[in-house]
Length: 492
Image 1 (tube, helix red, strand yellow):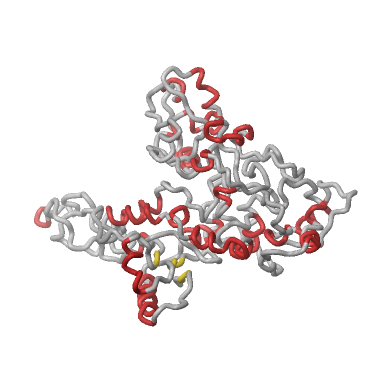
Image 2: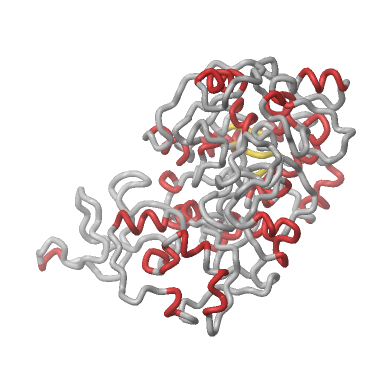
């Protein structure tokens, strides 16, 4: 079912009926999302049924005793913490379970070793456990590599535990103080990608107008929703429209269910002969019968004898938008967390929780000393120090380095931040002897996929940078380069 996110308060009956009608039409377009299909196929491993305790929403204020009680068991393990509430302002009074959930009454005995079975049992009892433990590499707390849309499948309770700032749960964890910011951020280009989707939809003939009203948005359960804009008085609606304020933003329809009426439609053989099979694309005289020759170049009056998504009858621009990783991913999801320049969380933490991605002080400022491997420098001894996929500190910041922006704004030939930092896309030729193997590589299909899944760029399976270890050290090899100086960020 297609859902509508937002409030109907103060909306007229005609507006309500319009939205219901649009939703009904769109329901004909939508099928299972890729994330649902992936999970159903076992891509995330077996799902474990969990029973979760209810965690109240975090309060805007409370006593020091309340904060202490809500953190008592947690700090028996997490003895040293950078900023217990993630906020530098001591006026913020939050206990651990206010944000993360879990059971703060479970306490570790001092004599209990961290490698004992009893310690593991108490940890599982205190923590919130995932429904897809294999996908999260449980019990590791590091961000897994390439989780894609796993957050749409995982339980809200576990999402809140690992990242209280994720948009699916932020209203409960942070909304008491920041609800207006959360609502604005869900509607921002960082979250919806409306500018990218709208531009691609208009320029490729998916939509007939320049009203960019396609965007990514989900409800608390990970289902795609129609995202409603603000309620605007009638006398201000025209001015709001002129300013680009949209009344609603719709999810991108599934490519396999939309009629292929676009400028990139697949041209098939002439339409003189109709058979009960798919038309042969680009094959003249497919039947071998001279008396049944097709007319070359004449588009068939229908592309397939079956329905949308069969044969060549697909919406090519839509599948390209779905597959293209220009904003990979938007802030509804975690970063790919698989190589230098790709480490980050979802939601508000996408920006405000800094990860180690770049050793260049010009890009990372004081965070450069943390390296480029997503390793933490937290004081918390329970967090592994040499494991990738952890934030530098358990702390929010408004001092966000440019390197954090590059995690998303990095695709070739990127003219958003690369040029800002003095770089441009590598031409694949300068210093080629140091970047390409001496002999031509012929990777197998499996080897190509393992590289392209991490770096969807055609040359990557054959270059030395197919090896992540080589990629990590390219910046260290700049002294060897004659014509090129490479950056220390190497996003996907």
